[in-house]
Image (tube, rainbow, N blue to C red):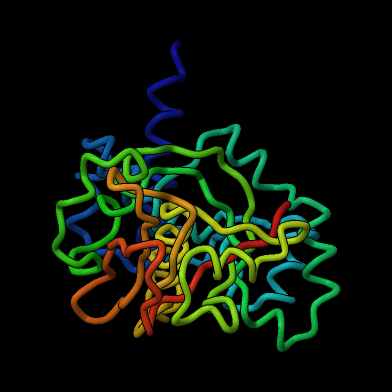
Amino acid sequence: MDRYPDQMLARQAKFVGTLRIAGMPDRFYQQSIDDVEFREWLVEQVKEKLGLTYEETETQKEARELMGADFHGIPEVERFFGEMTDSQRKQAEVIPEKLMADIRAMSPEVRSKYILEYDTGISLLDVRAKARMGLFYKQDWYEGQEFAKRIEDARWRLIRKIPVDGSFSKSWSQQERLIDSQIDEIPSVRQVVYTMILHFLATGERLFEKVYVRTSDVDSNGRHVDVGYFDGDGLGVDDWYDSGPYGPLGVASARKS
């Protein structure tokens, strides 16, 4: 006699029991059995309700302890930007030792100026599509720009969450000279935007709320692109003349890894 139907019913019963433990309403039970997509969504809701979270590696646990709310690993990324690929998840399990050494060497005051995150490399336009309504200022000028469509390699990044000290009211060349190229680099637009949106969704904190920061990207006019003024109307993506200083325009920075 084929035991598969009995095994399937047993699995369904176990699943329904889990829903009841989680306090899910009765109307979810039959739909969870009949609708595969709904069942997958519901599993994630149950996991969150029951506190069934990803088990972090020892290095990840150390990083989270050191960085506190400024650490965004696999759970945060998958919660807000969707499930990672197997290769991304495997890569994310290992934080580069250079980054960890930098973090360990920082004082708590310096460390509080950075965010450590796993960046899946999705484009600026994809970040915007995944963010909830109202987190981006209503703009369309950059939709056809190369920097907005570009995808980058997935990797861990240590991004400075405040502008580089002394970088306001300076031209691009003056701001560049403030960066120690042996240690730091100026991140791309998508890296900064990814950080701003992920950090806000995870913590509710708006980075660069009343300022702009220049990035390493240039638009089709040859001007370096800046991002910021992340207020209730959403974050803005703009540009400014490289030769012209602008009061609230600083420069972004990230540690090399």
